[in-house]
Length: 394
Image (cartoon, rainbow, N blue to C red; front, top):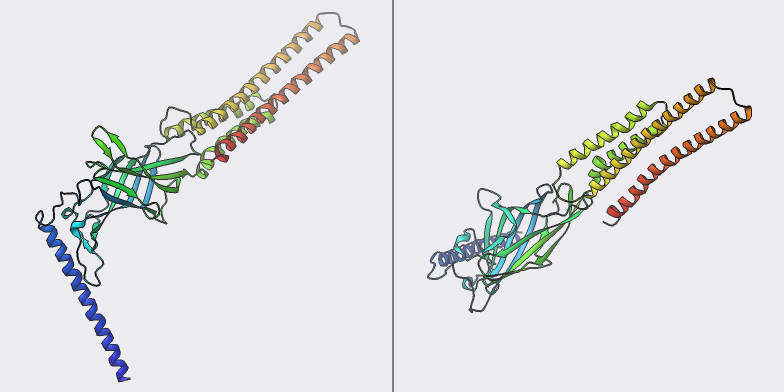
């Protein structure tokens, strides 16, 4: 038992000594690197690009981790919270690492040469805290990892022709400001270059895919390396269905209730069509004021406009029916007054006149029925093709 206790104490002491030695080695290595950096430009010049040959370009690997995304479709902007990393090799920073030292962490990024990357379509770029969340890791082979947390306000142009059944692409373009692609080349690893947080949530949108790409450009001053990260987002249709589409369809159905009201109650039929028409027109003006102003018709504009047309046709139907009924009543009064002042016709003539009048009433009733069915059928067919065209095709 005493022997086992002594062996355990020996192992514990060995671990403590090894840990202390490792910490001491890391501290010494860090001080060595910092001393080299602070003696610039004698031992290290942060203003000079790392290249062993004049014609050698510095390859910079770009990595982005999306922490949070907020899409503003009215201003057509995307507010992003990301961790941005750049990885390159600086042969001047290579060192012999003691055992147990994998890398050295440097917090002062001003001591090193950094790629002059900037976000081409960013409106605002800022740190996420008062103290800059920035660190740099220097590996023994000279590999440098620069990591920082940024809040970006990006312009995100959108095509709202299919709104609210639309999908959009928001691009983050990262380019070199001063170096041409002969000096710096940006690259993104398709597998590990882009990642997203599992808790990420964009209101009214879902993030479907994030893809890397190239956006290199040629200007009058040269060719510049550029990479882009494309965020494919899809609008969540459920809330728009409940808030906009179902109320508009209900207003159309309310207008159709006028078909069930007897023709003698003209005022009731008129109110059942006028009120939905006025309500839907006000509703359309209200929702247009809450959306981005565009010079073309959106899918929602097509739906609301057609619904307005259907309610208006219902109103026209009610008015025409009333006019026809008043004309028929006037004809009956005139024929009755004429009969009072003249010799009564034979019974056969009376029967013929009554038969023609009854036939004309049946024709009118049939025409009213066909008109009602036609209005309802047109709207139902429109709903079918609308949702197939916009929802069925994605």
